[in-house]
Amino acid sequence: MIDEIEITKLIVKNAIDDFLDNLEIDVAIAGGGPSGLVAAKYLAENNARVALFERKLSIGGGMWGGGMLFPRIVVQREAKEILDEFKIRYKEENDKFVANSIESVVKLASKAIDSGAKIFNGISVEDVIIRDTGLSGFVLNWSSVLVAKLHVDPLAIRSEFCIDATGHSAEICSIVQRKAGKLNTPTGEIEGEKSMWAEKSETLVVENTREVYSNLYVTGMAANAVFGSPRMGPIFGGMLLSGKKAAELILERL
Image 1 (cartoon, rainbow, N blue to C red):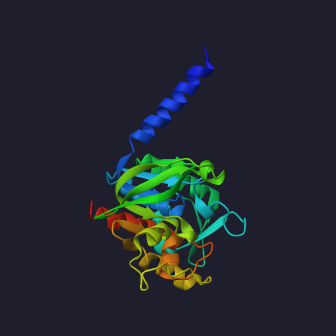
Image 2 (cartoon, rainbow, N blue to C red):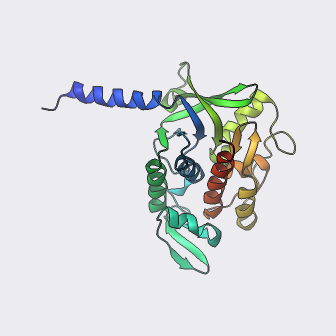
Image 3 (cartoon, rainbow, N blue to C red):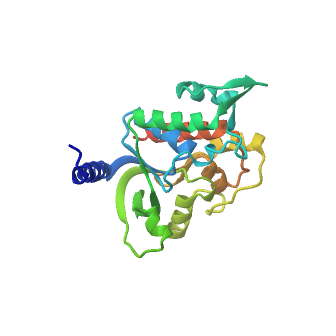
């Protein structure tokens, strides 16, 4: 027999249990785009307890739409091994690798989940927890609460390390700059994203992937926005490599 109340109980109980199990973790990631998903996979498969929070219902960031809604992305040779590890199919042309953007998102997410990372969608990071040792967690609220501008107090999770993978807006770094006053950038502030220059950006996004405040790492387009580098457009190799580097840097310290 199918009973509506039983279904409700199963959904609520299991969802709440999952949330409670992730109140104290090793790494909290804000943003479920490609760099965040890649970081989550490499961290989780190396036994780190990882939770990723995505404000939208869908994860994948800007990768879903490929280039101008043509559902294809380009990856350069340096990141080909990541495509292979995630079993993303591609076609080689002119020493570049062309993949379906939809398949890419689905397989990035699948591998992250299979590795043990927890993904929570529809949740926004509205603030951070800062202690003497540095960033110590996220302050969370339902995205729908923030969109509706309801006055509802948030809840919090504690983590040893945090990753800002929020893309162009670099939302976590923006909050930390306002609350703490200084980032590990040349000016101590977010330098701001420059205009598109794929060749430079693809290298710089990996170089810029680093600790930007105590226990806070920045990855993907957030890294280039924070350190004042160009955007890259629909070539995603740097994004993938950036997520992997963020994971490696944190794993060295765990």
